[in-house]
Image (cartoon, rainbow, N blue to C red; front, side, top):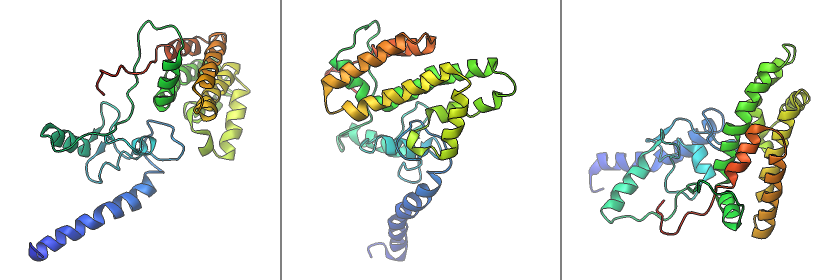
Amino acid sequence: ALFGVLGMTVWAVQMMWIPVWAAGVINGLGHAVGYRNFECRDAATNLVPWGILIGGEELHNNHHTYPNSAKLSVKKWEFDMGWAWIKLFSFFGLAQVQRVAPIAHRVEGKRNLDMDTAMAILNNRFQIMAQYRKLVIVPLVKQEMAKADESVRHLFRRAKRLLSREPSLLEEQHHAHIADMLAQSQALKVIYEKRLALQQIWVKTSSNGHDMLEAIKQWVHEAEASGIQSLREFAEQLKTYSLRPSSATA
């Protein structure tokens, strides 16, 4: 070998590093511990908020949510070493970014639902569901837990996580827990059903833009008529989504 035994050792370590750590360790720990930014359809988690040692696979949940993105960090406090190298090489004209995760574009003051809104919601569906958890589920759970009788308050302790979890990842006991909890709160029942209904819109209508737009309009109308303030505010926020202008940069 060109660099002798030392060179062969370095080459061997490089060849084994990603298969062992990414395929072995990450596919184990990265589906059991850590945190989730997005409710993708598998149990992938981010082990730590930085991707430095394992080709960015530490940010496993981000990667599974946006598998075609060159940038694996999503939150401002996350760091992807691979993205830093890509940006450096791009600066010198040695690389070109083909695709990154979609960046939600909102037009403040926009109050109408149009085809651009429907496509923007489809493109940013994972971020939108994360916003639903933050703006609707979390505050309402706090309200309901505060006024719940002491004898049933224990049912609400895991509500934030269970009510925002990808349904296909819930086990039978989780569904039973959710049913018991929703029996104690009509408001939580409404927002949980609306969350599932919102997800079903792009599952069933993503291939037909007109049907998707009509389904979103119906969802927003029902949310506004729900009488739940946080849900109404979220519905108003949905109207502000639009496609990013072609001249804008990601």
